[in-house]
Length: 244
Length: 222
Image (cartoon, rainbow over all chains, first blue to last red; front, top):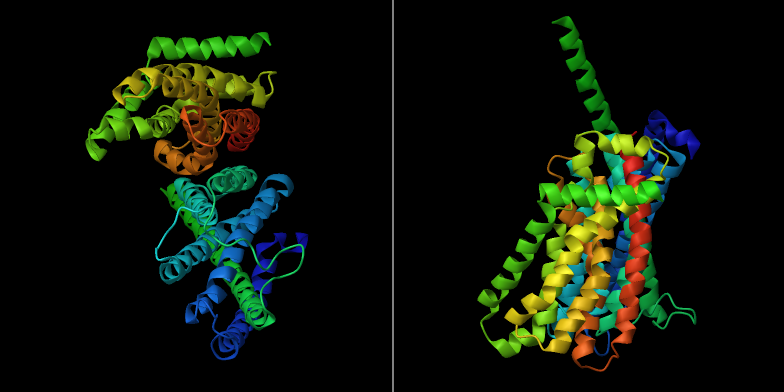
């Protein structure tokens, strides 16, 4: 980890890592989509619409995983003062928000034929919506500061407070339960989903994860370059001031 | 402890002499409650049924008024730096300022709620329930808001960002506050269950809010 505290080292890593993760993601998406459309059965109750699940579920997982990664980065900023931790957190916010939005939109499209409505105020849906709102707040705070280092520290505090709050939100939203089916893959007594659907789901989940990695590294690279440009601009402005 | 009470008293005195926060929040509370019947119609049966929810939403939004000044005023004139160099732990400082802020803004909302309940044709039990739940719940709102206030203390347009930051975190308080108020009037759940959850949320928020705001202020000062 410490080796990549130097942005130049990280950029070198990203030059290899981005095509690698991107390529892996493309490959997995190709296999996964083929499995989804050609190799997995339609559901006996839900028909073809069940295929929405292969986008919906991985998007939900990664929307939550991105927030956890962001909380980890926040710890990196506040505790270890890792110089790239806030770059990582900043890159993750829009990606996580996009996955969460994708989960909400596909869920809505799936809900219309299945439940007969675009939206219900059920516990799981509402928690995901609140997660999306938290992403929105974090991105708003990023934009509110001029200086990226100060923004990083403020956002890190907010991210951690939000992370503590997520279980509380989940618990309280469960208070007025629930149309949504309970979790059926990650359970203590093993998955209840049939293998013919589980395999494509897992392939798609790995494809999404690789996509997250690629996008994350690209976002970090862009942020590092943007900060370099900002620093160059500031130095140039100071040089002009000194010359006058 | 002496410094703690002195700080609480100082903040209350400043609020009383300068005005602002508390009065504006109260006026905003009244306006919100007045606006709702215009939107949903003057049907008293409906209003009395959703009255506790209206009062709770209005109170939640009204706590946002003046929250942005919680640390900002002290940050601008430098007294925040002075307080931070003192011997009192930062979290205690936040706790003192939060208590003073609640006494000036949150407490009046709870006190005014039964009165505004008259406008919404609330039953006496419902008025009592809204008063008690707001009394217990508004500290949670204040201290969750304090984190946002500490984060945006140095921003010029902090108030706008503040609302977006803290409202999602206030959802659990709103849920348990409204369900406790509703449970008092009738329904399947006994009043005790959501009310105790609300008390727990309030106590937890006071701790997390104080520590979180202290952290935010410490890092902002670097």
